[in-house]
Length: 123
Image 1 (tube, rainbow, N blue to C red):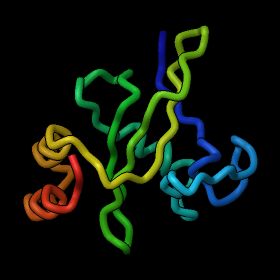
Image 2 (cartoon, rainbow, N blue to C red; image 1 turned 120 degrees about the vertical axis):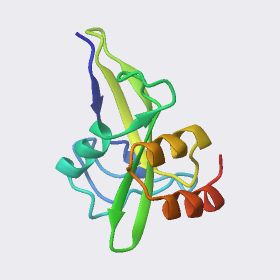
Image 3 (cartoon, rainbow, N blue to C red; image 1 turned 90 degrees about the vertical axis):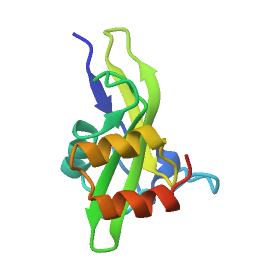
């Protein structure tokens, strides 16, 4: 049975992870240092796709911190021979309007957050 799993991308990391040492690229968003493994997996589990397909690797998630709402996007890394779909994720300032509306409709964000994010995020 195919499944969706997360593996970190060194290009988005400050430090060494299970993916190895950081290989940060200035064109890439850096993941926060305080995002732990359990929280990372919970973000993937709670993420939303455009297609409502639980195996769609292109997904968006919200993280609430004392700094405010953070947006994360996951993308396909590789499909393994056993059908496992491996994704990597990173912070983003982009979110399709459809995803933002779905998050509002699912109660993941308030109407006020929806309005602010709609204004602040790029589609």
